[in-house]
Length: 455
Image (tube, rainbow, N blue to C red; front, side, top):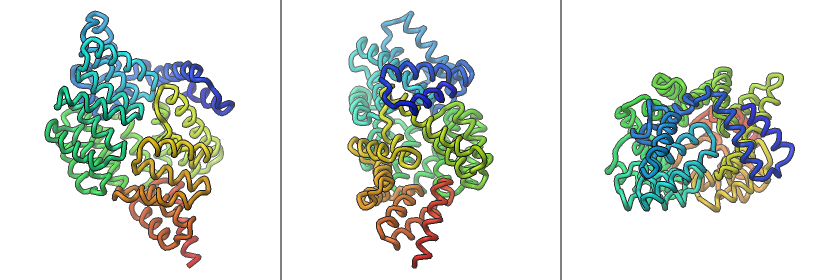
């Protein structure tokens, strides 16, 4: 965190840092981060959702990715022609990067996977690893291509089946993603497939089906990692529907399985904030960002500081938003497409012109409900609400129930003079999830009050 703060200061002083400089600072920042969380990174390793399934039993050593990576590195030094071990090492590096937010690991993963393919051209393990790597870098077209090639060689590759669903979802091809999830469920039923199937149903607005599938996944979860993963997914689903007490019980179950599981801690903090426990939410989110300073929890913490507005809180909030800028610069240097993260953070807490640039770039790459919402909000924040309205409507057209999306649509409708529609949208957002965002919910209530006064 200290190293990332130093880099954030450098970003504020001058945004023209060269890629090489970013890469050097990235290595310094992330090395310091590994020391800060306990040297060997075991806490962060446990944060990987379903990691025992994602990497495979042969990769993990006592559930610790760092130990797994060290063991695999020792193995390939002793057996340098073991293409399967090289593929496993590449995938383990991808998973480790996801847990500690260190995109410099992706280059190591890429080299390991390339070595596997050089030893055994076209092997499905390495191709599935390349699919996971491309998805982690947000290159979802490449992820889909790699997953399809892997499945041509092994139709039952769980990693490839899951990456194919992920890629189709992130490309906005929801009907195809649904069919891919059905195929995966038939071939390799289990926690990784169940959770993806549930998310596809949620995106189509079928929350009851998503809930049923996740409970099925939880019933079949065999180890602590899978219990923590699925219980957190259930918590997130219920929190999004405004059922905070139920969500908190799911997060408690996740943390009982793994008390250091970061997604569960973040979800609990968001549910605490929505349920009125701002102090508890701030304490929990401070723990999260100290170990994994990623854009989502950083923005959430900054907004909670703004909402509390105690002495010094505005400065604390600005620091969180600066850290988002630092992280996105570092991630970009590591080959990750971060335009969606940039658009979402900058629209409310940064440069609106940069938010619009990033949102347009992301929309041109993939047309999902999330990119439609980001582009709509960036256009609105840039004073171009009439252009924003079609995108806001598109973001809410699939039936996906996200209060933030509906709030954005309502604010855009209000700005374009569609007062009746704005009242309906803002009311719907607050009825669905009244605590969806400390600042957003407050803005929605204020906008509704203005609309009622003007009737």
